[in-house]
Length: 342
Image (spheres, rainbow, N blue to C red):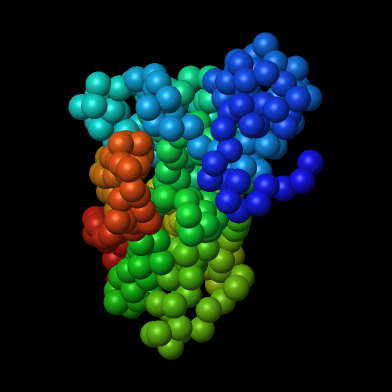
């Protein structure tokens, strides 16, 4: 199969694609609609041609279901509930329902998921801490199904709409707060290193220390996974050492709560013996004892912005002006931080 010339990418019709694939136009239509009654080899051949020609279904042809697909790489914890709430707020006002799916910890959903979305023909897709490979992007584009990445795990690419937060600024603000209290030995429990938000928060932490003239001690930086268990396990390592830190910046609130548990087990008091700062400002941050100082990431607002953007992309003849947006984070000071004693 020869790749199409640039002019052909604008003019290819279903009939032309069907002719080159050696199938009927109804078969190509079945592939576009995600129908299951197409042989895998035929489906693959047609999809390759749709990608090669850059085929995009005209919006008038694309009868949409009253749905928004919301995809998590892991669907658990209060963090996910804040995101679901935000998408639901916008979907409800638009008369739409939300379909939830999870990619079982993978940052890219499987091929089966893409076929199911094509069959559902939703108004749009929102991926949280996830991403699409090129073939999945092409599949959604050919069906005129818009998609937005919220809190992207990596660089989503210049052409991929995304909603994020100022993670670097949040890490900087958390660490500066501890420095201003008088702490100089500050530990950190990050999230997964493969995630852009984790790296940005730790980069902010490093920048605050370096700006204050405090050397960065690599032994005080632990790589977690954003789960409570990691905060507990790594918290024990950080706090059960003779030269333990007097304060710890946890990459998210769940890890901060795990750190609380580790401190209690070691007989340490918060904030008298160790100050703790989290990230996210989940509702539980206000309820724990002592209430947690944390960086507020506006999760519900981010999810609402992602939902509005994906609906705008579906309605607009041209792309909205802003398709890559970062919402501001802010430090919320409570009772888990204080000046170091002694």
